[in-house]
Length: 418
Ligand code: HAM
Image 1 (cartoon, rainbow, N blue to C red):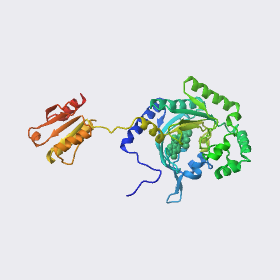
Image 2 (cartoon, protein in one colour):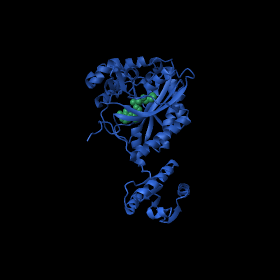
Image 3 (cartoon, rainbow, N blue to C red):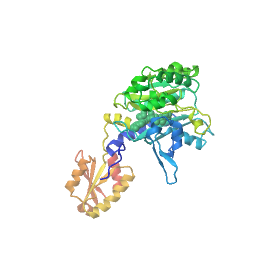
Image 4 (cartoon, rainbow, N blue to C red):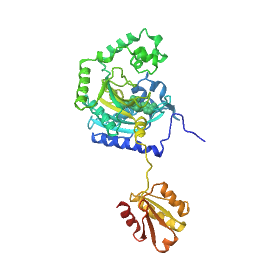
């Protein structure tokens, strides 16, 4: 038997209901706030991700599925969607008609991480991105959206953690202070952090190795180094979250795993998923559009981890298989052929109908209808066919009526919907 690849999984029909509920709830909310769906490819040239996520990040260093295609061009299965969305915004000059654009994308991402609970190598995200708005109110809108979505899905064990990562103006002073702090701590750091601390000391703050976490616990915090503009932005975010009654926590250690962020960043964290506490993450990435060849337009956004959210929602509302409104028990080939046409017409009218195609006895077909929890069963055998009628049995009341074949589909719709 061929098995699926480690870290990949099938999402089976019993689980899909929760996924659909989340996707539909999120899409409806995002559309209400003016976001429009776009669909982007699953693969991009490697440089789209390498240049934006950052060469020193775990994602780019170790987790990307990158390979040369038959012509030797390096391509990568997308580890995230933001860089691709920026590529699309720039490539199609979407800023030309109006720099302010709001998009959402739902789909799979690929990272070769160590699989564990809540962490997969193919996982799904719902991304929302706002381009062309420098105001911190866009960040407020995103955090409000996340908080509202979790409320609507009745997920209460989630809280917004927010931080500011400063801007190219104030971050160098912080980097210097952090570098100095880390300078004599090599022995306490993992080999990745020892290598990264010179070039990109902020990455050390994001390391998951316990010894590194302990070492940086007393490191200087970027909030103490913000310039006046960044400070004011961050204060505005907090003030509006307060006015909108969105609960949040200022988390001075939050740095996120991607290099493109500046100013406000945030994560939605939960206590119900063990080590994988982030159900969503995002923030402002003002320099990225320009870096990928576009105009100097600000941007901000988030991504929700659908697998993690589905796990939380699913544990509260287990999916129920859909049940048919009508089960057709047709006996013998001739009756089945005729009934099949009714089934197709009813399905096309939006009435969920099922039928057994295996020519079983009436008794076993009735058992099947019972198992599928059908509301009604239509019985059609040679006797009925001769009389040009069918028997409709209400499975709850056990009441049976005889209906003529002439005008049957219309009559059934009327009965089932009444
Ligand atoms: P991220 O924090 O890397 O951000 O991912 C966002 C969310 O995706 C995480 O909070 C988590 O729920 C989920 N996730 C990440 N990796 C995995 C995995 N291996 N298995 C299951 N779930 C996972 C980004 O991707 C940014 N592009 C977000 C963003 C959008 N920033 C601005 N715009």
